[in-house]
Image (tube, rainbow, N blue to C red; front, side, top):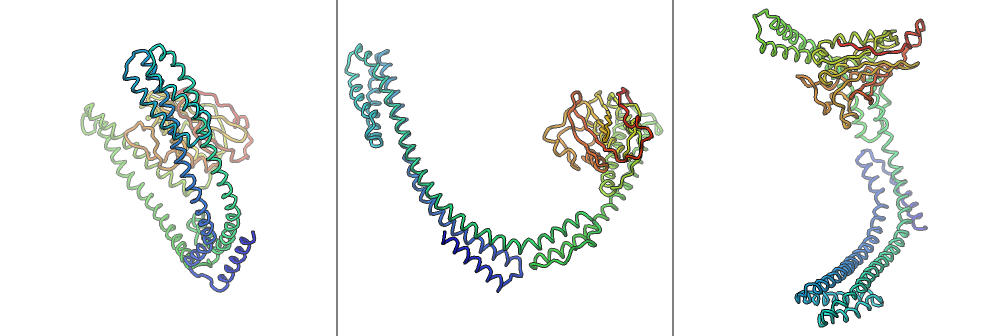
Length: 512
């Protein structure tokens, strides 16, 4: 261990001397110096390990070739023994002389392979027994049929000796492998202390250079977090000026420019969404009004086929309007985080949302079950209504025709659980992890003329998070899809009617 300790001291001394005399001003220079000094001990270790592995590899390669050859020879002997016995027994039945020819050929092949196997097992008694039995079996073709048949029992001990020889071959191979393993362990023990010493040197060097690099990078990290967290005010929350390599200083200046650019883009995005909503809703309202007038017969009597087309246009218009409103709701939730908490009857909120979807529910013939008794809770009425609106819209879009929609509520002391469940196709298991991501389109097919925007469930989840609640897909024993909106009690100021706040929520069946 004297050599590694001396090497460690010399390396640290050289590093300290280089750092005092020359401090790299560029990140590239610093990284190159760190890489050179850190990899030097590792290179020495790799050379030593490579030499040891090369020696072991050569030894293992030779042993593996011998093992394959010897194992293959032992298997061939077993196969020849079976062919000899098979041809002899067939001759005893059919008395075909060609079978004896085959027997003699296999016997000679067995004799040749056995002679090679004796070089591996020179003192093995089974090999000697097989050689003696081969001489006896060579006499079989000259015997009469009765004597030939009587000698067939000799193949049983012949097969036992062949199998014993195969096991002895495997034992010799295992012994050779054990000797290689012992040699490898000796080499491994020698490499361990070399590795411990040289890797320790590299780790010390890594810590020294990491400190020189990580300090300015942490400043950049705090700068990036400030940009992402405070948005348009990020330029007023700058950290102290960065000191370090020139590249990182330049990167800090680029982050200042990026923060300013992001503020401008955010303002442009909000302006674009406001203008887009106006520009899209105005012609869309005209289209829907025109289709409604045509359906009412203002321009003349409408044929059934024309009415079907007008209904399709009107349904598509409603779908497009819903997509526009969802997009605007999503943008609003991203920038409006203020809560407007009030004491609200949840049942009335649900009824108001169901009224908006009455026509869509009628068109699909869905049977609606909803709780009816008053249920007072402290919540943000607008956010809750928006979440329920998106959940019911999702149930209408993906539920089955003539199916069931259930809205349930279970109040507890500190939280309220509202469940929106519908029959139809269950949500695929691979889609559940990304179900509440914005603009994610799952594998389920939407029942409607237009494809959804993929932000309805994201908006509903954001509405729940705004109220410190959650939205989750849960299992239901009766219906295929069930979403649970959990809302905590946001205020404890209302105690006038605790019976209403904690009232039960029985189900009432209705079809809107």
